[in-house]
Amino acid sequence: MNILIFGPNGSGKGTQGNLIKDKYNLAHIESGAIFREHIGGGTELGKQAKAYIDRGDLVPDDITIPMVLDTLKTKGANGWLLDGFPRNMVQAEKLWDALQKEGLKLDYVVEILLPREVAKNRIMGRRLCKNNNNHPNNIFIDPIKPNGDKCRVCGGDLSTRSDDQDEAAINKRHDIYYNTTDGTLAAAYYFKKLAGEGKTKYIELDGEGTIDAIKEQLLSQLA
Image (cartoon, rainbow, N blue to C red; front, side, top):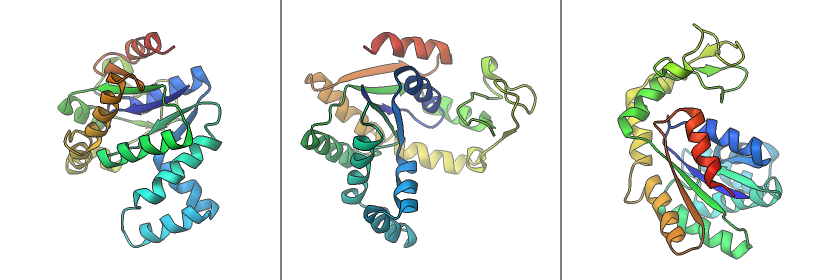
């Protein structure tokens, strides 16, 4: 099973992705990790990407997409969950074309729906467990409030990301995600259109529900 997942920062995308990959034994492929692995491993694509990054430039799609495909075909040979890519409309179109060329099926596209203001509040209340960042802890959400300064799941120490407390940084990230013209939501809607043509399946989830409720929604729609 191959799945592409979309959701704004603060939607619980990481938590749901973790649940999906465990249940279906999928490789959880995250765009940032792909860059780190290629650069750390000294691959040719990694060297090319590093040259752009070192200059402070964005890595072009003709380097990024081959990296993504290579990881899908190797680590994701038995099924994958792709998270964090594509981030815009152009990348969505290029990714789809590349998947078709390589004969890689996209079974499901999942979008977690969440109003922008709710997403921002969730980010600012998020606390990260040192043992597992996907353990849900949020001081503003009653069902997952931490135990003081300890993780509600494992008791590990909690911390905050500095950019989680920076409204300007949050707004910048959400400006990209909620952009329906050429941003990340535009990419999601591109796949939604393909689903309407019968080329994949598109699942929309209510991100304002509890973790368990969202999980139940999702699992009921996955084959």
